[in-house]
Amino acid sequence: MFNVNEKDNFIQFIISSDMRLIDRLILDAKKYLEQFNISDFSEFRLVLRELLINAVEHGNKKNIHKSITCCIEHLGGFRFRIIVQDQGQGFDYNNISLNMPDDPGQIRTRGYAIINSYSDKVEFNPAGNRVIVYISVSNKTYFNLTQENGWQNIMPTGDITAGAADNFRRLLAALADQGHMKYCFDLKHVEDIDSVGLSILIIFSKMLDKKGSDKQLVIVNAVKPMIELFHMTRLDKIYKIEISHDT
Image 1 (spheres, rainbow, N blue to C red):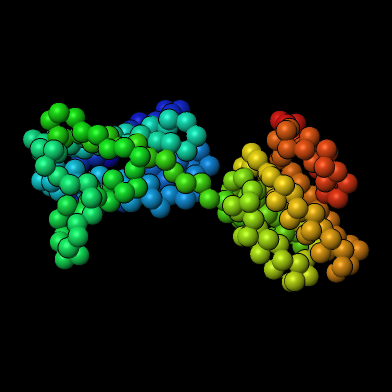
Image 2 (cartoon, rainbow, N blue to C red):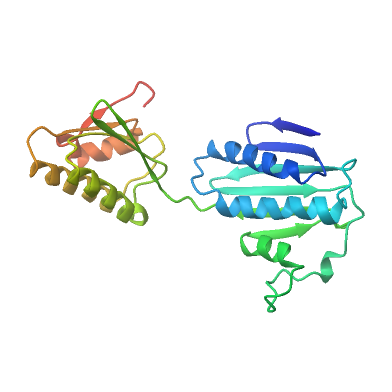
């Protein structure tokens, strides 16, 4: 059994207690989170997997005739609530430790320690067969690169701020060294750019000027406040700003 019910702010899974279904659920959960511009799924995946393993192995004792309900709810921004409930008898959660064991050879009790390490808050229902986890997902910015007809198309997955500056700078320097002169920056997923990000764009333009006079720099899909910032800082004198009808 593998049932999915998705609405705007949550997705619910009901699955049989089969370990083989966990990877399928996690894959669907990753696709669901992508709509919220989540670029780093690693910690969320780790927490979700441990919750599901506990429900299958310890909650339902691997009885495939018993089901597990998993609900992932978007609380706003990059914060989510995960609720996992099994059909087992539950357990006394007051007697478990949420801290990582000192003994590296100890196998048991690591699951909830891992869950607790990457979560904001962990709660249990009175019966001990439902776990509620609140988790904030870190949103690192990556720069996806595609090439088409001589153009280097760069799409950041998040904001272009000081925290992403080093990766952005290295990417642009490498492309300039390769001799590319035509660039399109798709800012569809960018809500903010700070002075560091603006400086990188300006320095990059000057870097290309030293390599030739045939550079082409285009920015597309920028939100209205960012377009106004580009006008105010005169970046639009260096980059062609293409305004979409939705802006």
